[in-house]
Image 1: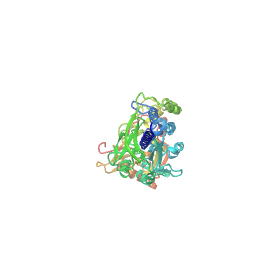
Image 2 (image 1 turned 90 degrees about the vertical axis):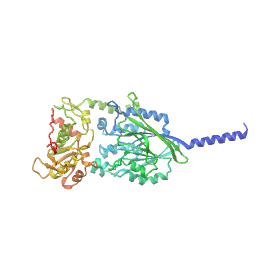
Image 3 (image 1 turned 135 degrees about the horizontal axis):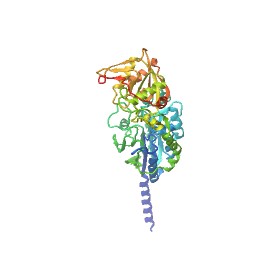
Length: 501
């Protein structure tokens, strides 16, 4: 071949190589809100064991060097297996599958902040959490740059900003939580100075169509202020989104909850111009016949065996009658009556405030297993007590009544409370003449969830002497069932309204 021809071929080859070098395709795989659903327990349920198989298949197909694997939180709590291991089972898949990033969710802290730090210790390198920082430990990384397929990808991690309203004032003694919007504003200049080819926000918050007055989910506001985000990986709201544009240019993706599906994004990047050319995405869902991930099953085997044992072992005697999670708490709900009686007995109070935590019930004549108990009490709440006056109790109950159609509604027990016909005032009658009676409620209710400002204001008063007993509500219910074999619950109408007086 003439020398001129060889030169032309060489130039063309270099030109083709340069074009190939400018275009990079990266796949981002995301899980979120799995809630320790390790194996499928009901039809259409989720299974991390099966989801891990899908994840491994895609990682093998695209190549680890061209992929990112990210979890957006609520990973360690939500099943009996999680309760038995105090969250440990939720961290095992993160290690087995070698996740690149883990963004803690609000339920990561349900076993207490010290326990979270124990679970987080071996995963420090992959935790991204810019708006929550421990006060007595080294800070978590806010963001990290990853190189995948020659592309430089910045991933910023943010958790739920509303944690204190769910976990209570004492949670703030261990860490500092700020709004994600403010935290992103602080670190974005640093991120931009690195000139990444793609910027991803992985956050334990969700996008919503309507404005969020409580600012629980800040995603819409974040992308409006920071259009630099190419992709947002959301969570917390349990809503599946295969992918759509939000804001002026940002792509949004969310896999749903419970280990049912994996979110997959394909990102085409011009590495020369540091620009994302295109993003497409979809959800890959497990099927009935999806195989399990054998290495993960092996790593979880000890806990799976403990789970089977707990399902068949009686934790408390059988009740004499069904105890149903139906009716209005404080009026005609057997489950809330049991909760209140159990909390009052465990904490030594005369009053209690509680609702229902699930649709689960206890069946007459059937011993209560740990599995049954977890279904009835699926959260890691503790018992909080407070010494309230009759006027304060009336104010607390009235505020609850005005939220009676919300899942957080709690009914009163131990004192009769009458709601005025116009629903604007209430009167409480104590069982005994005393200026104050101690009230028991769970720690989530005591935190207020942003819905009960009067309750939280009362609990902050020094004379109320609010105390977290540290007693688990699940332990209280178990103990009550054990101490009262053959239990029969006849709900008393403690709460009286114009309709039921």
